[in-house]
Image 1: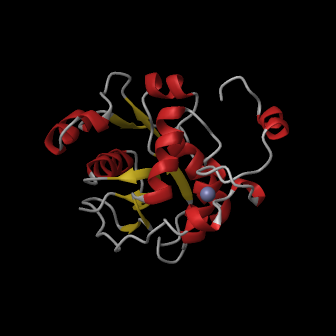
Image 2 (image 1 turned 135 degrees about the vertical axis):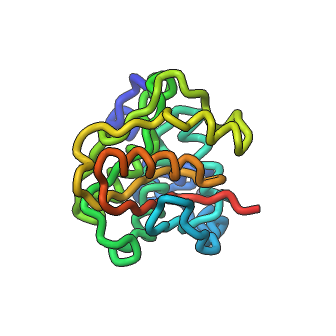
Length: 212
Ligand SMILES: [Zn+2]
């Protein structure tokens, strides 16, 4: 957490399942916790997205770990989440993107946590695909409100104009990366901004999807 460096944490806490603390190699999920991970039922891409890969349900260990990462500011779950994401990455299904673009967090939220979890997941996916990450390609208004506090319609309104294109999008086939998809409004808003920035194709990779 925060100032406690990774090497120091590694020394104090040997590799363990980030959900139940049983010893595991590489901080991955233990067998019992991995069994709580369930496949999503291939949700259709939201408007503006050419191809979507959302492999897991927002449930079980995936949900527990994302909540820890998001609200606890604890990076320990990252290795397990990145490994799940990388296991599902499929360049063909995503239309062979040439750059990964994390959905941006507001500066305020990023500062509170010390990192943007979408960016950390984007780095893992990009490594697996052998493509660069463009962390500044999309930017978010400082003053947009946290999406989790808002209803579907309010989410769309909150995001309209809140995501802006930055540099490096022109002519690219981009892969938007985020942690959780609910209504898909966030991805649609990001896709609109990416197209405004000149992206020619937009795929999306989301670790988990909230299914009714
Ligand atoms: Zn476990």
